[in-house]
Image 1 (cartoon, rainbow, N blue to C red):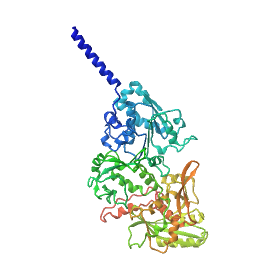
Image 2 (cartoon, one colour):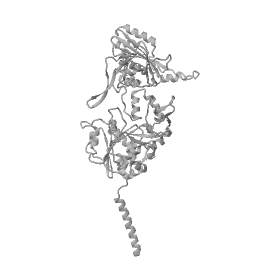
Image 3 (cartoon, rainbow, N blue to C red):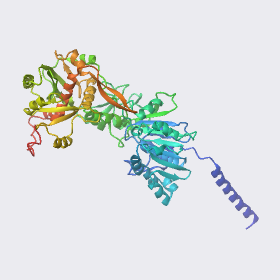
Image 4 (cartoon, rainbow, N blue to C red):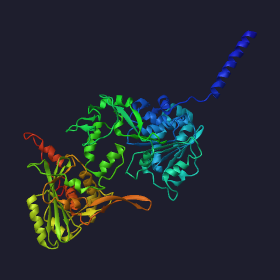
Length: 610
């Protein structure tokens, strides 16, 4: 080798060493979480409906949420109040992959319980270790399998990931982390033993890090009791605004309502749904949503707050990755029939807190709704409710139409000693006049006379009101059978009525402003006077404290509430009878020349009494 060739070789080797050294000492390129996810993340069939490479463009509203979690973002606290099925959990896993690969450091994920942590790890986190190549290579071979099998900790180069349960006091002790995730926050206990508030304890784990990041995620639950709502109200409260394809006006996608001129609308047969623009009232269809989402932007309500807050609803879900607008409309029609299903709809689809609509109703507003009924009403079922007092019986008769739209027919006060037969004879005469298909009679007073009365009438039910927020309006058939095996009174079945659920449903319907499903009509008749409405609205729902835990309870605001009890019993009678006004309305629309379905003989005479 000549001297010149030797010098050229040494020059090339020196240049290569300098390049390697420059790369080694150069600062890591700034990378956002969304960029990392688009470059590296792969989705497994275990965790997502669409397998393959992650694409932030499918859920553009998650880009800013992820990027404010990036190492370069000057944001410490991020609050996400959301509905289900909008991709936030996958965005969280993207951040964890970003931490493992690009920004290593001590981190912690907390779920409400240890059982929830284990389920989340198996379905969401473990696929990240096995399906995303850069993470699989980082953990490496046998070590990857070992890490995936550990339930409480994942050790990785440059950091450690703790996996904890929010109900365990040990989860908050002796662990300092830079990155903290509290998922499903509203299912956490409000306080941890005697140690205090869960959020204060969790934030304490990040005190040692000046640039810590804390992410709080949850579907909300009950207003004023929700932890995620509490944090959301402290944030800048960002909502995703999208442009109308017709007028270009930016607006958040909101459910709206019958009384509002915007939001989700649908046709009478529930075969098509669309969105009505609040600015130009143009119809927007779901196939236009991808372009709207791509052009959308987050707009804060309180820009001065240092806490980032994001609100996501199922209306924003990309086509094919969540419920469609039509599916939401169909679920809404079912949800309005019960407080429990309505609450689930608001929480899981709209990402909103449930506020007890039965908290209070003003009687003056109901007086203004008195109307003259037309000669023919679209009603299909008639029920009644009887409240028993010492010196009188009170009866409310209600006609029910499609969607359980209610027409109050009459309210009677039958004076007399309810321990004597005369007043019961008056009740029988009144029922002969109104001919209800179902009647619920409260057996809380003079029970033996109630049993004697209903025993002679197959359409009548002896009932007993049971308070408690967890009780259904009426028992399902299976629970009823199990109870009846243990409880029989002179051959009479006593049906339990969840009065809290019934009052909540009735009061929520009294707040509906436009006739339609659930609306309650009142006739212009002498029985419906000031006293009637004062009794109908004689209770309100209040929040009390039991120790450190809040709970709700119905409280009477005046001495008499018989008309409320009668209305509750008439609603319970509809449920107990098992008769559906909707089915009868549908049958009434069938052409007269249509061939009727074949008759089916009951398996037993005890299967049904209708």
